[in-house]
Length: 375
Image (tube, rainbow, N blue to C red):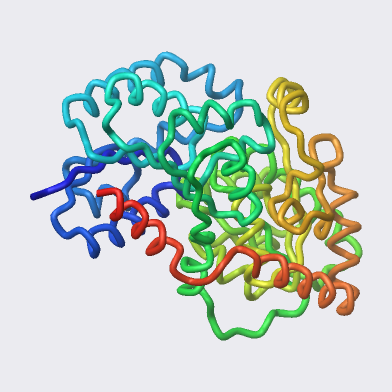
């Protein structure tokens, strides 16, 4: 007898995690049928029942979400109608809390017998701890990826399992046997268009200032797609750099670059964990629209923005946020790392020690085992 799962992911990273989870579930429950929304990878695994909506759904920041409010409202209603008609045994929600927590509440009201599982737990411990008791009433199981999250959710009465971070598995396949290139700086401006438009000009200006005194150093920028690479090359062309080829732009080569570069500057997000696990000494940058930042300052209750610093419980990497994210700050930090091997080595040891807390290989399999048990 076949079982059905409705699954929701709204970002590129969620699509990757969702596809791996679906493959692991299919090995355990071969007759399972998948429905829901995600990206290209989830659609490839799930087939016609899974809609690719990530390109439109992956917007970041309060202001940006409000601009797309009507579209999100319509999709929410369509998906709710669809999940009611399917009446799945399990609803699996992957990260994407702004949408998924509301969707969980709506499904719980209309389908009380459907089990609701949250994978890649939302970071409400950072921005809204008051929601955790409400989540405990709505969700049946939380699958968390950071070890400190388990106690937070379980203390509210929500059954929680630490499955380990999916990055551990995903990065294992990306590891290469390579020697770090001396004097190569990696630039990682993020995977969203708006993020790149804010951060890459800052990185380019930093390169321009560094090149004045150190013309022998080289720079490589990682683009998440051909479209983003085109925009990044336009920014370089308009920047007034002494040579158009001073910064090389590569596409979908971020993990290789993290292993080849001497050091780097990384946009806040999952990439900072990837860089840590791959041993890249780096500093972090973060910039959003000022209204989003002002609201976020009122909501977010953590000492750091960087996931590595949060996981370590102390500042390991330098964080340059909003007005502090300016060329001279970045230039000074990168020069320090480039000129001091001992500083790079010390930072690399701390990064690898911290990233080891993300768990062992097999996170998707452990998550799939928990969901299969429910089925």
